[in-house]
Amino acid sequence: MIILFLLPQLAACSPATSTPQMRQEQKQGFTAKLVRLTLSDISENGPSRETASFVARSMDLLWSSRRELFAVTAPRLDASDPSRATAAMEILYRLRSYRPLPGFGFDEEAWRRDNGGFFAEVDASVFRRLPRLLASQDDDLLQNLALYLGSAPASAESKRALLELAKRPGVGEQALICLTWHKDRRDMDDLLPFMLGGGSEASGLPYHFRNSYGAVAVPYLRRSLEQAESPFVRLGAARELIHMGERADPKASYAK
Image (tube, rainbow, N blue to C red; front, side, top):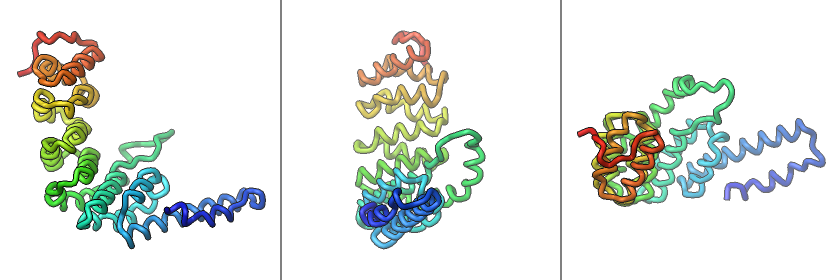
């Protein structure tokens, strides 16, 4: 819908009658109008699945207006309409997790430092609402919340929330994966019971253990290979052990 509103602008940009400078100016003008329209639509009508999808694909365009996007989106987390709150949560996740395409000279640490104040504001807005968000029964909203918590810095609060979400059937798999994104080795002890006793929602955990924790995950993978209830988890543990150059031997010792 956003694109449809701007089709007349596209029609006016005829390459046959415009110079390179004119085309550049037209492109910049089109982008500015697209950003303004997106912010205006969210402000007036609230975020929707459509606008959230557009934001997800267009953060490079919207990043320079991040504070305005945050300002019109965050209050919509309190919307009584779950679809609005879900879309708002997705937009905030996209803001929190955005990184420019890495290229020559890109410095991740400098990026975090330069934008730390903004990210802290976004985090404060979400965590202030966390108890109410966790009380939701809407799986789509909780999926987006799990993604947000996984992209935020590791903390005791985010860990507790993700472990709570991990117990819910509709969002458990995503929450478990998001907790491994923190790459905090201490989380393995809390994740292990899910890997041992879980079903299909835990089948991806062996990969994420290897990917996030490296060699220290080997004892946990061995234990899962021997004790996990799910055959898919046992198969995954064997595959990751082999990938790491370890013997996939269910009789090998493991950490108690």
